[in-house]
Length: 255
Ligand code: MN
Image (cartoon, rainbow, N blue to C red; front, side, top):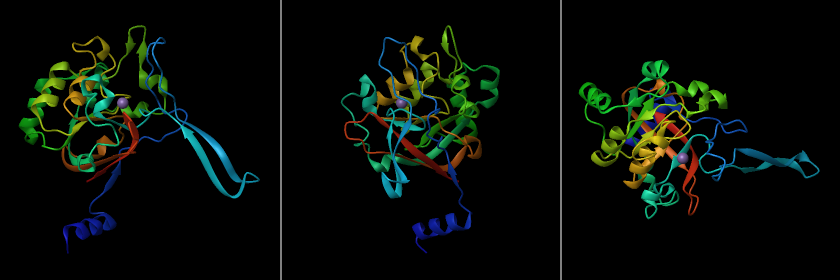
């Protein structure tokens, strides 16, 4: 049997599991809030067109509105000024939406400190245990944060100082973006950067460095606890919005 037919048979039999890493899209899907003087992203809304009624007797359908960066979504390089001349979301090659996953589990550290930042030592320790980060792979930071995904206030975890959510240290972001051949980085939180990243040097280092190096971001992932540290394959499929900076996407993992 060909490799592809073997894969299809393995999925049908359950020997290869398909794990949905996607958060559901609805009115209360958490979105990023910026300071009020800045432009704001729109939450996800459905507008009913007809539902088996006099507006359309046999069919149900909706219009929807939302920001490009709502829910589980894909950041294209042109989302950040460092990548402004690189691909928009419609130009990202489909071959670069699929790759092996490397999962770093910092659930315990984040439970103790929601501002936890992945360090270079964390990466070194992970590579000592699991091998080097995969070329053409997705690095996924497992934090347990998705358990707050149905409660926007808990998900944002903000106080007077701003949001408190985990992410990458600037040093780790620079190493991963500049020294590896990863496709990109995925998180369970509202964006790829930590909640406090506005005050980092550089500000928002994950966005700045990954997108500027033609790498991608994935956010609001769920079910990372169902993935092994290595060996899963992630498929992340954004909509081809022409000139878009990102898109909600369905992200699955083959395990
Ligand atoms: Mn985004």
